[in-house]
Image (cartoon, rainbow, N blue to C red; front, side, top):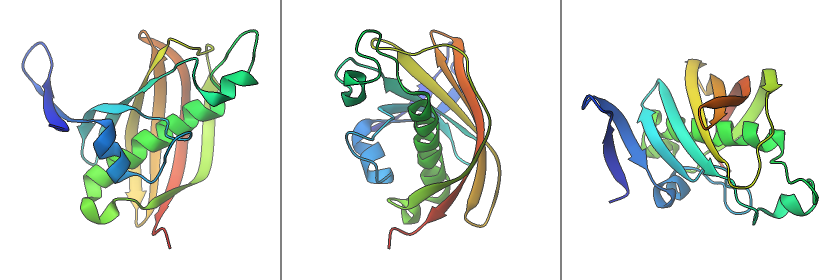
Length: 161
C-alpha cells in the first residue's frame, strides 16, 4: 500500500506516509530533479516531513565537488519546496495533482552544515499561510537531528498549461 498511517511511541496518529509512486502522481518533478523520496508525515493544511536520501549517484556530484561531494544548498531548498508541494496537494485534493509550483521568494535562508553522500535529509515544512494560489512556508532540513538548512519561502500554484 502506498499510504499508511504512522504512529509515534505513544500511538498518536502522525498523519499519512506517502511513498515515491504516490509522490510522482502528486507533483510534476522527475529524475534528475525529484528531490523528495518519501513523505513520512503529512498533516493537511499544516505540515509535512519529507525524506531525501542523498547518494553518490546524484549527477551534480561530478562537479560539486569531485574531491569533496557537497549536496548543493539550492537543492536543499528545492527539497523543501517539493515537500511543501506534496502538502499542498494533500490539502487541496486530487484537483491539485500535477500543478506547477513556482517560487516567488526565499527569505532568511541559512545553510548550517554541508550535506553529502550517505546523508538522509529530513525535510520539515510548516504552512505559515495561504491566500488564493499563493502559499508561504517555513522549512528546516536536518541530518541525524542536526539542523543543516532553513528558509522561509513563498510559492504560487498554477495549472501546467
